[in-house]
Image (cartoon, rainbow over the protein chains, first blue to last red):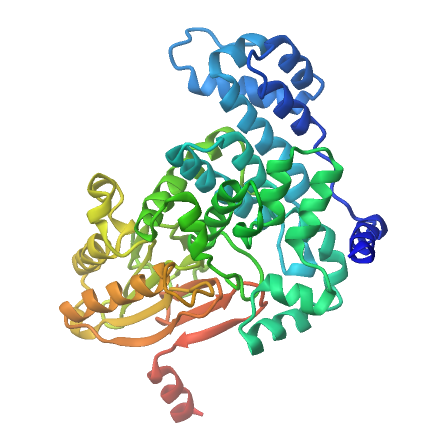
Length: 286
Length: 184
């Protein structure tokens, strides 16, 4: 096992095309996880990043209809909109930097993985709220759930045709085919990368196990929500590449969350509406 | 909109998810992108030169009656009758209608817990049947995302599977081929 562990981390080390580390997210998650949130420190973190500052002000001025004058002070904006919404916006803006680019190795065009990630996050968040799970962590994990694909995309450029053949001939999932063709799979690589970047354990486990949530010991619910959010995004056509829907639906994700198959259409509708709303504030499309 | 002149540039009219579009403009190409488990239905009347395209997300509106009122094309049961009505107003006659259906992809799901695609297909077929319509061409199920095009100039319907660079013809009028051979 030690050698395998070693080789997977070595794999990440050898990849030259790692996405930029979203350093602001673990820092914010930690700040917002405290019983009493220090709004000045939140603003301090945000104000290091001009595009985040602009996005938060834009959000505030578009949702605070009651405000007669547009807000230009970041602290005031954060307090008016609330930490949860600010945090989610930050995830969206920061996530876009890593997830927006085209990944030819998976047949992903520019913006496709990003739209998929946003749809997954919106669906998973809605479900998290309904079952009373921590929505912030689930939202973040869902935005980043396919991060490992960015790491593997380069290796796959040479073997994408083999991957697709493996899926078609054996009715295998993309994840299983990655393991066959490359010896590694994107969920685990993504989880390892987030662990390196000091993301909290629940988030790492949810990404690592988003195709097999029962294996996320201690964090089964979060992993299940990301799994189901991913399915909803695929149903809605927020997918990419050939054989876009080659993933296995895990019935235990329903059991672990208490959700029913008949609930899924409702989450599709909510995701449809929220996607449109979000597009008013940040450009989701490329 | 007036029918396009024979040489006018073709242009795309995009039909988004949970939307429909109807036109009699012969220069138009109706297109709907990325049908995952969603289902697209195109209607075309070769005599009236009217076409319509719709992109359903879900089979049944009873789960969200208010939503269906605002966005009937989201659901098969409210959307398809609405499409028939709209193309009918433009002169499409059902007996001449060429109906094509695409989408309804499925994930790998042995137990059938996540069968939105299959349920969408069944709902479409049922409503078409109730209206006495038969399908001229279809490409359904599988694990692929499809984009669907209806070209008003000829009634040709094409599909593009995501991750592949080429489009394939789903339906094309026989008369085009026949005219080509007879004049050639």
